[in-house]
Image 1 (cartoon, helix red, strand yellow):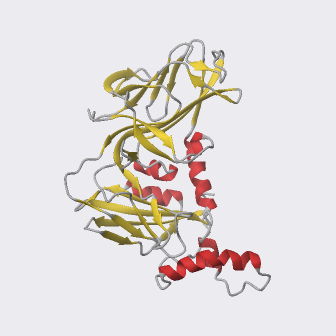
Image 2 (cartoon, rainbow, N blue to C red):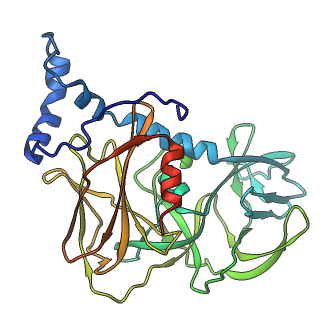
Image 3 (tube, rainbow, N blue to C red):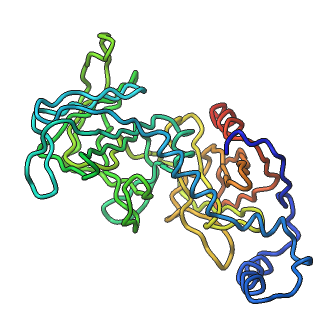
Length: 346
């Protein structure tokens, strides 16, 4: 899909349809489309295309699966798994249990996803949204996001003991701790779930030196995890300035079913907040509790996938009180086009 270069035209710049009219159209169009046998010539085919959301959701899951590395180790003797971006997992001997509690033996398959930058966070929809104990959702600064799983002959395995995770870094931050990805109303495969990060109370980290697969010494974060699934190395974003709500108005035809809106903090390469609140009455995206610092310099990223290509907009902004950002002109291009633009952000 990503090599497809066929140009498409979408109503990206039209702001003539009011939010009320948009919501009316989204509500009643499916009734007309499926309940009528009359000619559809009067229905704008561009609007029909823009309403699609399944393609974007499938692209996110595809990106997660493409990021997955698969490595086999011996369950009895244990061993180490080396990720292509420098992550190291150390499995002690006899680390795996079957679902019935019996020890697993022989070859087991380890799955690893490692995410160290906001470009990959966006493509896989793995933002740095963290939940406080009181339920407030705030932005985190990440030192690496990881998906770890193990199975034998298609059977998911459990951990018999904690395993060590190592994440390389050139700039150790002693506020970093381990977070766990909690499923967000998802009962399917963990790799397909959207998660929100919650702090692991036993998630202390230390700076350690490890020897990589090529024998070279590497410095990074070292800690222990006790469960498979999603793990994140993070600290809470801290800014003393007064806070405000941020709302984003996306192009007509888009809503929380077929696009995402992200905020990337300038000069913070691993901070990517997802605006995960959508108001069906106003058609606006927002964050939870009005916790965006006034005066913060950001880039707001709108993204969808339509007809095999990414539809996106990236807008610079300085947060003002009661900030409302209107997404204007959008662009259509390949995944490589979007990656280049995000990588160029401050």
